[in-house]
Image (cartoon, rainbow, N blue to C red):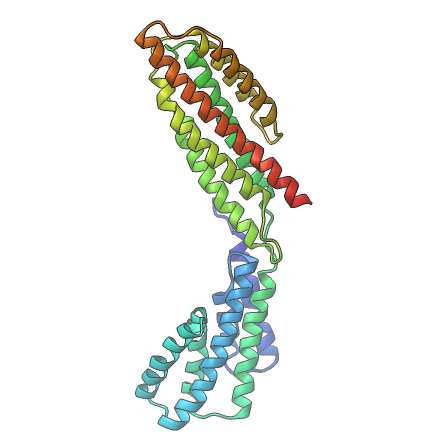
Length: 321
């Protein structure tokens, strides 16, 4: 189905407003105001401010250089070549390279007119201000992505529940079958969610922190642990008492996955379980020794998994202070 995105809508409305203002002011090359607006529509508010500043400075630089060079060398293709050979490296040096394309619009106006004057300078300045200014106003509107981020959070948590529950089922019954599709899906969800969270930060001019971004980073680190322990769990072809207890622990952990922090509770449970295992008899066979070694590694990684969640809680408390 044919749809119109918010950026397309902003571009169309902004271009119309810019050309209407420039035409109302009876400026020469008034259509160029719309071109500048189209070029300056950005993805985020913060990048919009940065890019608008670069383009404004670049346009002024191009305008001044055009006035000087064209009057000195003349209005012909060679002078335009010389101007661009000077202007482009200078823009890069001054860190306003994003203004190169928009500046070329202004430079070509001067070249087309074949003369310079105060009136021409003001005409081009007004076009620059209108084009970039309207784009900046259009970029002030950015749709909220909180709903999308919440959906990603819910889907990632649901997958974590499934994965941990499948680990639990396998430890309790090594014959359990699982295709593992949630692993690939979760990795992709986390990457997409992080990208949206970063864009959300960029849409706030005075905010440099975002709880959603920290949350998805936390889940990413936890997912790395899940990937590490999976081979150890899947390699177990027999069940021991320790495996059954860790299975029940994972079952409870899977049910507790969510935004509410329960890490301290499960860390205590894990510590109790470790103490219980230390009081048990030593392995009697090589196979039992290998199984219990793998399970101890799984417990060690699960502790890291929970500490990552606990660190997010502490970070949140420090931010609130």
